[in-house]
Image (cartoon, rainbow, N blue to C red; front, side, top):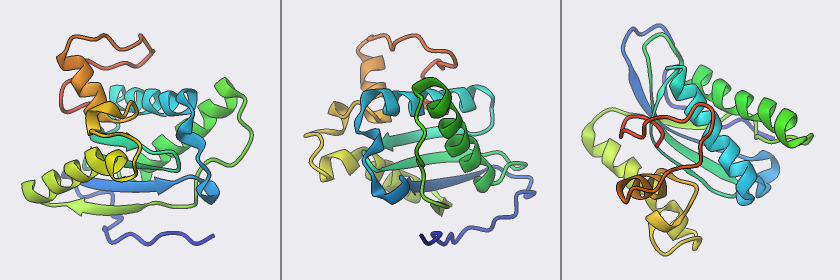
Length: 175
């Protein structure tokens, strides 16, 4: 299996925070995240990493066979390290909490450096509309494994199930 190329500079000692649009796929393109328990565990892993201040998640969507995340990493953290926290953290917890013993992730990931507001908004729209484009929902707010849905629920006052590492739901963290 090939490792996707990444156009970003892997230098993690830049001193400045950087924003990326990242995508990673499941091993063999298997639809591992079509189950609620797998998708919710990945959401919990993202929340826990944000709570540890390892990075900021602006938007995400968990599709059955891949994940898109719009995130900002601090200057001392590389995008590679952030993805290691996400993918490694999820793999560890899936094995421990769900007794999952198979391979979860493809090797590597792809990323695009987000340099301006226009790029940020284009990637945000892509993340939100991915489930609609794939026929999994009629509107982004209807797809339960993404920030569009979670933010909509927060706006209408619905409480998320209590989980360790749950965040306050501001726009700069995982809702």
